[in-house]
Length: 151
Image (cartoon, rainbow, N blue to C red):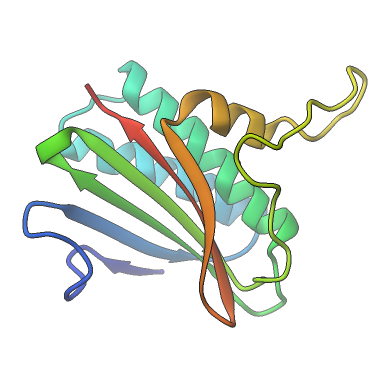
């Protein structure tokens, strides 16, 4: 695991980032959720707070999607949390190595049939996050991100 808590140049002076590379496995997705909740605890939102539970759910969904749909053998996924204290916002980013496998965009999701076992994760992200979307910053990765109001 690689942890980065202050990357050069990418954030404003008041933003506080946390970055971790994790294995693209179920265990990695579960660990991403636990690490996100622990980081929020460190930033002042206790485990039993609504914000911490919401962030845990969002990270869990995005990480599970990265493992299920964005996995490439031998490549990790990256979790990045950026706390913006000036406007009480948290940005969650999960980056995987499959830029060609992009999810539908915000506002275009369709509910699955009632008996479907999958297909509700991004609907939860859309319902709980203030904004979400995807980005491909380079030809080798894609990032699915969302923002959460913390106040």
